[in-house]
Length: 432
Ligand code: SDX
Image (cartoon, rainbow, N blue to C red; front, top):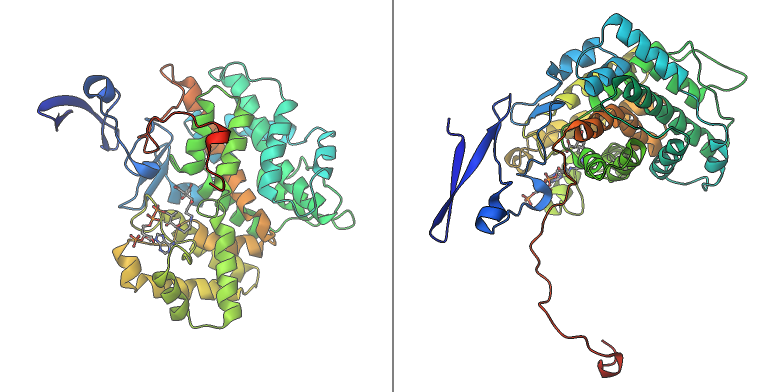
């Protein structure tokens, strides 16, 4: 295989190095292109542009492969836990029993938020969007943390990562409780990370019932499946902010804002709204699918399609199976699951979706499980953010540990007005 690409332009040839990754992906390194040829590249939406070389997550979109640090997502979802996957993503390998025990103890030790943060919650209107609260309160929590000095200092970084992971879940639950006018619960030392989330969100002073193991396991799997996903919109945002050497809290708070959009982490909520709409309308599914095909810019099949997966999103398969398991174990029936399954079958038979390689993505079924866990819909993107936190932390660290890291600063092609002289106010035409 050649490791040189040649570009010919205006009678001149330019040799560009070709980089090959450990999974044999190949990229033309254009770092010197402008210097050598005066040209830059243009790639709207970065669909064909690699922003970095990363060792954290690998996706093969054509084959529907997803691996965290080399471990297949199917095996991690089956055998691992969210704290263990967080450790794997952040530190690069599965922890030993002692390392995992130590990390879990750190998550327990740091799961409280500073008492004075409660006043900040009170400043939000009751109907404030949970993602706005989460982003603001992550930065607030950062104000109470000692400034991270050296990301390469394993011990210090482990402490900082554990603090952020532990507190983000407590912040999310507290924001929900405050929005409902309910007393804020305190974390319990005897519960796992995810079981504590269920406790923090739903326990009432007069009934500290134990969280359902089935639901806790399903939510833990949801967090595992959301933990990282290469250079998606929000992770790229975290890396962009990290490249300016902004601190960890500021960087992930920016990631929360990017994730909030309905085309990204807000899709899990949009899927449920879509399924509810279909159920309430009583329309045949084919009619809704036709509406999508007629005007996809206006009516998207939410939870379908992906920039990278042009085959099944492996996470969607796992979550779909988990939906059926959780609902049957809990003796629950959710009509929206039946509609989702029928909608998937209808779309996957339709040439419009087949030709565009549109398959269910991670968001298509995740909302069904969160409904079974009684998570309120506005909190769905927050659950995604809690799950994605380890991936953001790992990517922030990868940017900061790379000695060759430079501030991210893409170029552009200017298409606005060319040079023109200033026109004094008195000389301007009225009404323009
Ligand atoms: C996530 O990047 C990641 O890794 C993200 C994520 C992660 O873990 O971080 O996987 C999480 O964000 C999953 C995606 C959640 N979003 C949705 O489910 C929203 C619905 N999906 C689409 O908006 C869309 O598929 C995207 C945003 C996911 C991908 O957009 P692209 O790659 O820019 O695709 P596109 O808009 O260029 O679409 C290509 C074609 C177009 O048709 P044509 O113009 O060629 O005729 O496919 C059509 C689109 O109209 N299309 C859809 C569609 N998605 C794409 N048509 C109907 N319904 C859809 N959902």
